[in-house]
Amino acid sequence: MASVCFGKEGYKLLGLDGRIRYESDGSYTALLDYVYKDISALPGLMEQYIEKIIDIETFQLNGRQCNESDYDEIKELFASMHPFCKHNFVDIFADAIGAYFNTSLIRKKHYENQSDSLCDKGWYIQKIKELLSPITQQSAEFADRYYNDYLEWIGAYDDDEYADTMILFGDAAHPVVGFIDELRTQYAIKQFLLFALDTEVPTLSTLSVAQRVWLYGELSYFFDASWYDGEKRKKYNMEAIKHVSLVPIYGFQDTQPYDNSAFFNETSLLELFSPSRHVLTAPINDNPLTKDMTEALGRLVEHTKTYCHAEPYEKYEIKNLRQLLFLEIMQMIQNNVTIKKCEHCDMYFIPPNNRIKFCERLVDCQNVTCSTIGSDRKFQQRMKDEPELDAYNRAYKTRHARVRRANAGSKNKLHDELDDWRIEAKKKMHEVKEGKLSLVEYEAWLKQK
Ligand SMILES: [Zn+2]
Image (cartoon, rainbow, N blue to C red; front, side, top):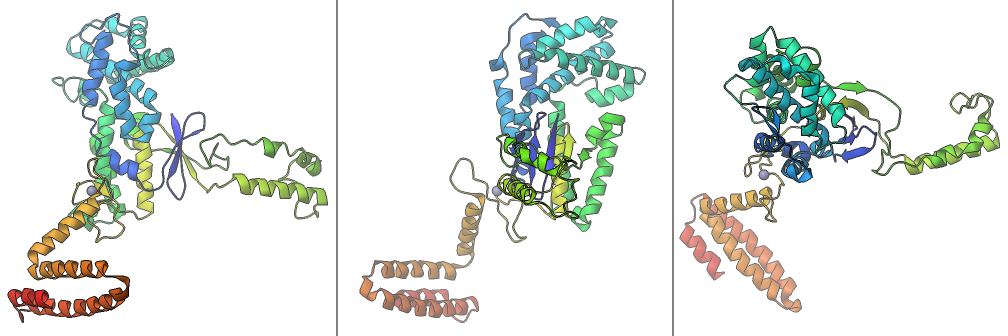
């Protein structure tokens, strides 16, 4: 479906055409926000969409023409979920429709003993194409793929009803859930973060990060993937295929395609380096370069300085969001990044140091962050706990305002006086803390001086 290039700082997500679709800034924000997106509406929205086109009980087409406005809510939700979902919306939505249709069919076949006509290819393709055509012009291609999935599913599990039930439906009593992969992925990623990187999980934090990752791997294999084999297991085990390559990422430095005509228009290069006709095989070190060759090479070096800001990267082939986020979390592990929950919004963030308790997210459309609210709250609490500090602060504010209002001539003198007062006032505040001076006496002192 896509590929992703991981460098030192974050990753670049490429589409099938090799163009950059999204660049992360290395802050892991999209990942940490993703696990808290409310996607619980997805199954209901899928059902609504399907029902506009087909009766899922009888599989009769309604004959209704659907268009983009019939799934705009889903599209909007995807756009806010994660950049990967935004840029691969059609593929993910189509796959979810295929899975929904297939699981509905298999349920019918198994639990209601419908006839084998449900497996007829012509019948199948007609229905699924109708479901897919509002979202893609390649509905025929997708339809073929889902039909093959369907055959594989019924073939693989026909004689093992138990496994079938477990994997596809949970159990017979539960309805088919739309976007089940999306729901499961979010849950799995949240759990992976908790297991691998959350520093505040009491029991797990006695393990090393490597041990925690190992434990998660064992558990997910056991609960999530042990029923699958081959490709399906890979998907759930979050494996990704790595490519190590020197081939430049198309448009690596920006989202515009890189214009390499200047590079290839350096025609003198080929002539100059012939007869080998290849720069890299011409013996640059053994034979002294001619003046022309040196100049041509110089132009290429200048060209490279202008166009290439690339860093070494590792390229992975990915099929879904789960693989992408798995790789990103692996990168966090390698970079010794740890996370904890913000004490205000209860969402994961990466604290710059262990003492930081609040994140920098903006609070519900207000223009303040959790950390501002958090420090305010802490400050208010401290004022309550320490009345002598409260008294000091009030007195200081009054005096500071007086200095601010003073005219330029006396400002410096008043400033010095305020400094002296602060030292004295803090000394007395400590005396109150130590019980050597009463709060009433201290407040009286603050007022008179
Ligand atoms: Zn927060």
